[in-house]
Length: 610
Image 1: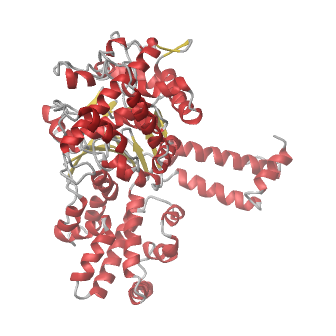
Image 2: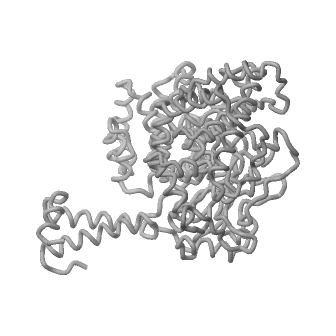
Image 3: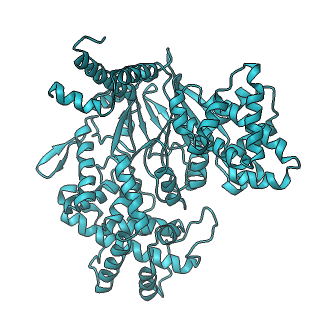
């Protein structure tokens, strides 16, 4: 680029060279701060109450900060009162305003306590970053309070600020704003390692929360691509989505959450299965909540109707793609679609494709999501890298090309985006393959035995891909990490997808600490299988930590009884020296900015800037 043109562009951002110098100084200072805290969660499966509480309590981090700040100053009950206020400020305040006798004194005391917590939480960030995280209406006052000096001459100044907040009836709003700022700064970046949807009743609420989150990324799980395919009109994906949510008595997310009318399916089921007892299509109910379909007999008929329709449309896909080698899954003898079924298919496709709220959520899932992510020397992917029995990455043919390892992941990502952006036919079909194909990196098993679970031998197993055997070995972990270009001492593979049966002695950590599965069964449907209520993996400047959660109650109960999520944290890896921003991916990006600014100054002054 010509120097004159380059300087012209830079001058739009910096009016004077001194501004550029100031920015360099600021950025170089940021590089030497401790890295922010990353949180990793996977397999949320619609458990909105639990997931949102985990975000609010930062997987127990806020409790630790409060115990540090008020050590020997507060009882455990007082600490829990303050925690509940931070997690659920608006709901807690309604109770407190009814019960507190001296509300003004309570306001002043609580405001000061919250300011102390916020100061502790924000201590490793720049003042500029903290200000950006604070609510605009209160940014100046909060900035003053969390930067209170120990100078006694200013004591009356700060007391006056707190008194004015209360006198002006802003105590309620200010406490809510402080609580939200504490939550916001406790987690610097959030990673969702797949499977937001299905089983639980609140996937739509989780998506609402994620769309407003300050910093996150998503690695798609097989349930996520299933919903992506359904939103694009892939009937095999639509049928699977409805079938799963029938089985978990959770059609509310489809009808109430996304405004998708299932009356056509209801009518079809009544007309075609009225005398069918629908044995084997019993309805699970893990929460005993109300549901748009509380008639279990009708729901069972809808369940069976959509399942049979699923097998028929899946057979069409399998026949259309012999290269997928799934002919052994054509198990339904009579799979010819009737006129009534074709009509139902067209109606359901339109309903899913026209859901405005689903479109918005899938748009966000495409913008923030991907098949895998390399982030700060960690490889994040939901399932596995397809591997053969000899430990080699499986070669999969797509069109005229063959792919394996990272190249296969990249191709899968490309096809999902091709389906989303252009509705390309093969790509749309391939989304269903990612859901359940034998070499799908998101499925990770040799076969999905949906048919057998209803009509066949229920004892037949879905065998895991050999990846899950080899990944226990450190050398194979290093092979996978090298395949994705990850080097260095502190590197890990972080998977979800396969629930860790802690109650049976299984460990989430293998490969000498290089491999971590963080699916601990957040979903209520998996609590009995895993024996726990989920995992959070945390990475801060000191090391890598795994937090094991107990099952969580409902939000309303947590507020009423002032309950927190019980968790235990263990250290996975302790770093020899504290990791700074300069050691992270973001640090590299900041260093690039510094280099560009130095080049700008060099060109401006025609001199070396080192």
